[in-house]
Length: 488
Image 1 (cartoon, rainbow, N blue to C red):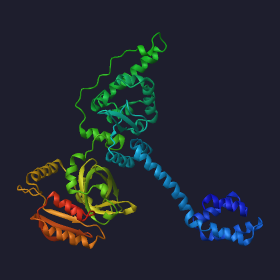
Image 2 (image 1 turned 60 degrees about the vertical axis):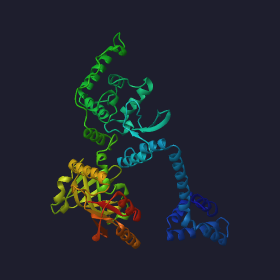
Image 3 (image 1 turned 90 degrees about the horizontal axis):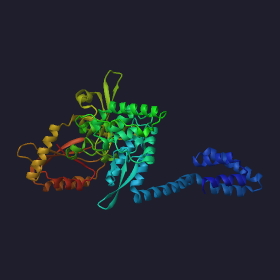
Image 4 (image 1 turned 30 degrees about the vertical axis):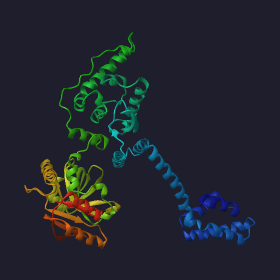
């Protein structure tokens, strides 16, 4: 029995109006016992008035009453199961098209877009920067031939670029569809004569790489005034010549010449992408630190409910900072830390902020240690300590890696190796794990790396000093996949 059938039974047997039948449906669906009993009395009376016996009315009601316990869930489960099957089918057989549609539907939610682009990468689908000759208004699948085989990629939509309005995006696409691809910057400016193609929109297109086929990003940005002057002169001449013997197509102005300036730095390019697309698309500032964070930090995407109340270390770029001024005239801070695949909100209380304030600057690369909390139903890290990760740290780490390759382990004759191995066990861990860890560490070769355990926020020093290798780390992770293993 489903909702609509309950309403039909009430209408035909008890003479309920559509509105009255809906009240009965809601009472059952929301399991309001008192209201169900009231409606039951009304239902039986209605059935008797319509010539049905009381026993029949009671039997019918007893048949539909259990609906309150399963009907709503079952009918919705069937719908969701069908939708789930359809989406799974589309994602399996049309992965690029499915992800492009998903990105378009979420283009106003940058957190979702970032997650979905990461998923695209894991699926082997490249998401490319906007391009004036390939992008449409929405995220679009582009098919190219690579070594004789078709390769599908997703091109960023023009609507998703900040400062490029929907009307401008539509004008760019419609003109291209009508008269072909844009051959040059001059050709683009002459053909797209939309009132909203102004300084902000042209600059945004240049900064995100949409005009990169016509010139390097920094050269375009430094030529905005030249481009605007050309557009103004061309439109003026076109307007004048509409009333003359000449056609607009006969207007000839010198080609736009771009400024001769150094190319945009990687930092500038990524900063522009973050500002105007809401995320990094051509590269990621954390990428060159990936090996470093792989050794000393837990990837944010791996943090889950098992880590609640555990101490962890994460690393990434500071993407948002918000200071809060408290009544006691002290300051606390909320920040978003973003690594290659995910982001996490960090909460910095006044005492910690006093000693780490210089760290909390947007676009700085940092490492953060603290306890995972599910405050407000969302996972966050309550910061105990934080530090900048500098290029010097990266160089130091690379020297360690070089030494590892030479020695085949983590220890260095030059005294630049880590000295601690820290194993953080999850809450409610199986006691057998401790026995397995102890048995394995007993077999490890003696060395200079001291082993520590963190159990329920307590740091315990073990009697083990071992020689650490990549195989050691792998074996420890195999014993306890949910444990966090770090070296310092």
